[in-house]
Length: 278
Image 1: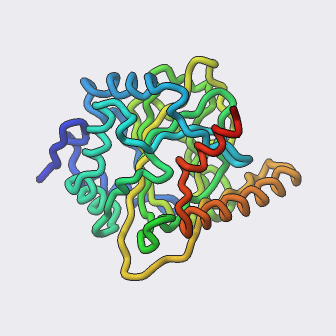
Image 2 (image 1 turned 90 degrees about the vertical axis):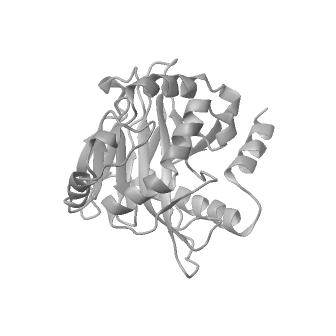
């Protein structure tokens, strides 16, 4: 039975057929959890590189529906992190993803738009949502797969940073996934794949919930309509919070429209915010 070989990724020891079965046996939400995803000799080094990134390098993704930070500039990341992301963007890996997910000809995004490194500090959160369905700049790219790799060795369950996968049918939790160190979650992203962690993180001030987020697309022969991130309330939210979530969704749509039809980007918008925040 043929197995894929990678430098950083420890799925070398797992056959793709069994992962494909596990990935596709889910009904409401297709996903798989792979622990010890990176080879042990690299995992701590990559986590240290993530932690060593200076505060000023992070772009704040702060609005009503989320409070987190991101970094999509590959050159600003550590050397091990760069090599890992290149491996996860390689043809060998996208072929592996295509096989387990049944989405043919998947490609990675070299710009890491909205992805790359993520960091959530104390009080940070991400309301339940579905992701943008078409790339903001490449109009014929349909988003299909998310890969999240958690990089906080210090993580404790008391932080309450679980990734919630929720049913599109009734908003109930399908699974609450602890973002333990070196755990990878791969899932289909479409207009029914609601996920997030709506409870503010309870981490110590000096620590954070750290991750790598990579998105994979299919190139179609036609342009797709703009479908930005769509946030929804959970059943326990009060009426005012539900209203504010909807208002913020409209603001996200306007920003996504500007990204698609102008030269504005997350980075340029972040620089404007930093300038006026001085």
